[in-house]
Length: 202
Image 1 (cartoon, rainbow, N blue to C red):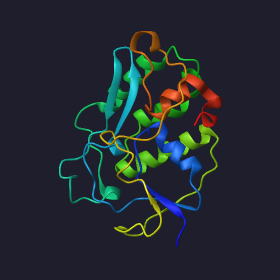
Image 2: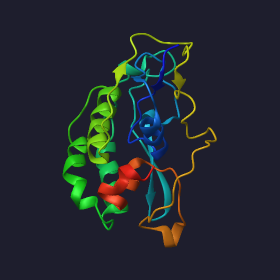
Image 3: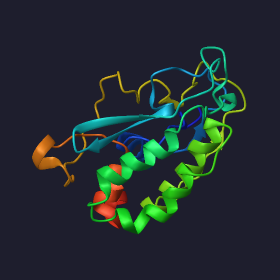
Image 4: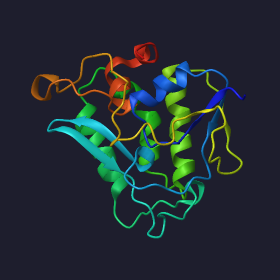
């Protein structure tokens, strides 16, 4: 039986994603051939804004729905979502301890136009793994694997609408006095608040 796991590729993934990635044994596969599911972390991330939890969504080209393979989903630039996301990140984290330390690495993602969501998410993943100091290698699925055949399958379990058994260890958040602690946000919430210690926090 093959040891390892299949992970979906998310936009600025939640902390749980990296916790599962870090603890996984065996070979890791990123899913490229699933049909693109709506309302998931594949094109959405949750951050802590002054008003509480805020979802940032990367719009996709119409038609990128049920029957489009995730590797073929194109990003829509019909409205200025990049500027909006970057302004939201700045507003939410400018006063955090480490935002200025990392912002030059993230700013280009809100200027350069990537054609495919998968490529955009993977480029962000590489930056995140570097700053989290996680030495993790992975490969890609070569077709859709319906039966994971012994592999741990995270394609549907790490999901904004699925209850998780993962519990985020509390850490300081910028607006915690106003909003209370909000668990399992995007990894950037942890990174901008805890900096180089983040990779040891899950």
